[in-house]
Length: 273
Ligand code: ATP
Image (cartoon, rainbow, N blue to C red; front, side, top):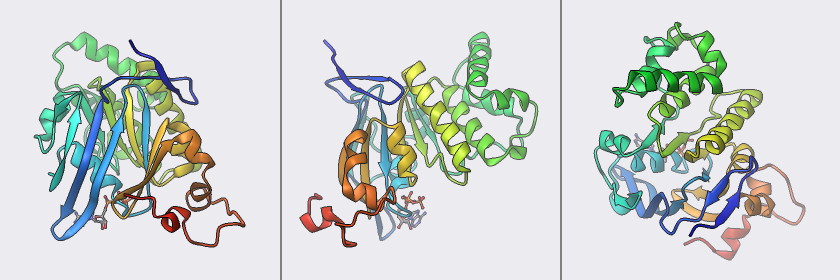
């Protein structure tokens, strides 16, 4: 029997599931001699939005690339829906229902908005269902309907981000990995995109793991958060509790506390693993 675990700002219920949808255990990935992530363990429960916060170069993108099979980890295991997907072929991981929206969007610039969406549905042969799904994503992002015939390369950065998320939705995924949705966007557009991400989570039940430098947005939109520094997770908690922590307030939300003298408290206490 399931119980309600957490309710995010939008009222989404993350259901307690004995088995998390995604589970990383002691994952280590490197680029040649450069270890980008070390001993990363995290879980994402079905129905929740989880966030990995961290500054430039902390290893956020590497975590997502390792999950989606773009990078093979040197150590550790990754389970999705209870199945081992460590170092599997990225296309096979997509077929299992895990979609990755990469940093920088990577839309097909020379294809129209409509054709980009069709590419997202390449695994489906049900044309009626695909047409319905396109209308559904246009419901989330009406500007894309207005631009349906335009080449994706001519869209603004924010519109390309909307298209990248929409293309991922076309595959009706269980889990979306979202890499820095705020990158290069104005605060207003960032807010708009985060609101729609929360709506997608609430209305479709799509589980989301996002990585972000914009801690304020990520903590407000997500249920559970991990803080990544130099490739290691140094803190994790519900976003409600993370928002109240002095270290987070000072170093990630820019709220200076008189009592903190420039050294992170978790480093003083050496609480990381
Ligand atoms: P950003 O927000 O800047 O993308 P990030 O937290 O996503 O940062 P990663 O891109 O995962 O960080 O990078 C983690 C570390 O790995 C950094 O030290 C980075 O310089 C290094 N790195 C990333 N990609 C490569 C690569 N292709 N070759 C060598 N080193 C890399």
